[in-house]
Image (tube, rainbow, N blue to C red; front, side, top):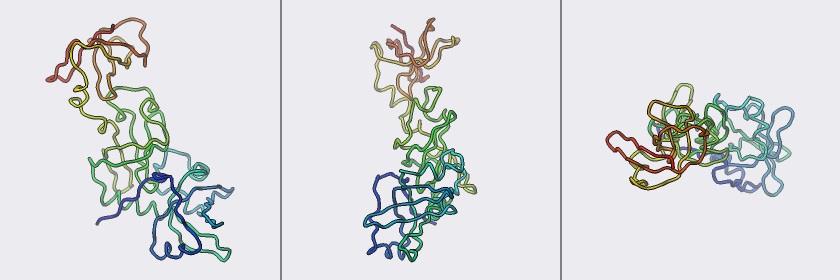
Length: 267
């Protein structure tokens, strides 16, 4: 089964040009469209506006995410958190007052079909960072379906917070690490897109001075870890007084390609 992939909500920051002339064609063709949410009411219904005074409503039952992992947000935020954001939906009907009846849930169901049937482990996909928690970043990969990038999968260099690597609203490429096809849950990796050790170390040569960032402040047996790039870490001799995240200048003493190690000297 081949299901067409739906791009993440807000990927192109465009509102579908729905009007009284073409809306019936969108209904007939069951097309996915995108709009900007203007309001979330007390009953958690979403309201979307279009050109020529055309308005639509996504009833609460079609707002709530069917993907339990969505954004890592409390359930009530699935409505209020959509205000002034782009959402995707199907146009289901037109009521007597020319208000469009919309469904976001149906778009998610199509996107979940793609996850369950066609998405492959190891596949690289584009996504948008929708929320950040201490343990990782939630990345939408299409149609409101969100996957989780654990903090240790944001880079090879160890970080204390995902904010050191990504920001909400950022468009990134991620690699599919695992899929729970029954639940439609996806675990993603960002560091796989930041280049291999070999690709990163090519930017450096022995005997030069470069900028680095302290990633460990505790004394280890062999020294202290210094980030040269998000996916390349070197080891320097421990020095007192260094702070996590501190920018330092280092001298590259040795690059050991066989052991994939870089020896540094803080200068």
